[in-house]
Image (tube, rainbow, N blue to C red; front, top):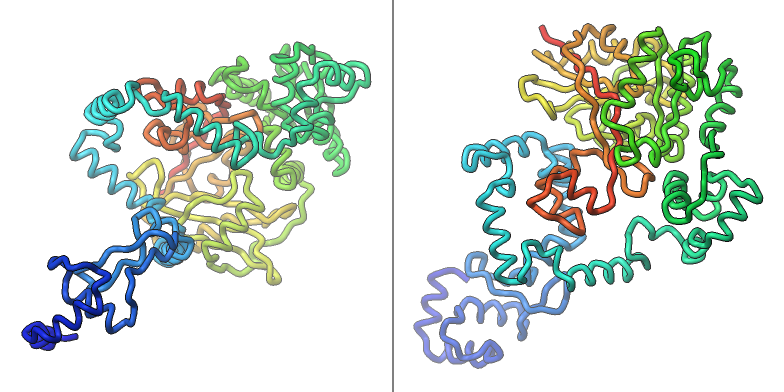
Length: 512
């Protein structure tokens, strides 16, 4: 209804009375807009609409939009699957990923604003916020943090029980029969000591992690596992190397004596270490320099040391096998000139790197691939710099498809990137636990420096997660128990986490 029509209508007391009679369910409040009453009559709806999502609560009239809102609250609006899907589709089109909040440019902008206003990249890090938060909690609940409230703790436990049938989400995959069995000291002693079953075999039967079970045996059951000198996973890696025709010896103590190398292939000058997370994390005695020092000891003897996590062998076994096969020259070979350069969509790139890269997919702005006979055989992704804003681009991922070596593939993809996108500067990081950095030298990069070891968090020693996910300012939303007065590492320990230290990275830079 146009404004002049509404004005004419309101000047007629009879018409106004009729409208009010038909919409008397709204009440006699004169504050109710006449447009709201007219909307009901024109829409032939004589009740207040309810929320599209929860279908329970009534919604409010929007004076601005001259109609009712679709949702009763911001919670219903943001959690509606249709809204989430639409938002993700829009973000994928605009930014190449599902959330605008994951856009590195936006994150940098938010951090810059916080730095300008508060002197830190996040307001939650300020003393003002901490003081206000603690004062509010003390006033309302009598404690400095809501996670310290007994009712909250009980509610968290109950929520986990309702959702997962366990007080810990990490145990949801384990049956009650398995929990009872692994806590049965007599049964575990019989299997391990009498029947001589390997811990890995027991872990497989119980559907629990090998490393986790090692700790449980030693810490909770008092079972001596010192006889378990060579893990089943280490034997499986050795079996695989035998299958592909690699000569090696195990438990070598001559190359870096008195230290041991799990597997040593002398003809290739390559050593392989399999790190069980339960024994190679900080709280298990492996300090931040342990793995780096062992790698350096090997390098001094002209030996390349590849360090594999047991979680990588368990969860990404085909990728590990492919990497080992490539290191020993057993992969099939394809010339880059036989391939054509194509641009991969975000979903194609994510799928490729999840299947071929030991670290999986990562947010990027651009991904180029090499196609051979209808198959993507190599891919290289680029994006805004994550850690050093002084460079225009970061080379984020490069990998070949499994059990394949594309000769010159990296050079062809990077040359195409330089030719088409004309970058002024590029930075990239080489994981020393797996790589040597020779590829970057072929691409024309210069080694800038070597970083110190990085740490990765683990809960239950089943797999590792990036420390970036557990930065202190994020912990209040991630952890069951969080104390802003404690450090990141202290809070993580309270919640049962340990951390694994790697060998650090080589930083390579390229520029015109």
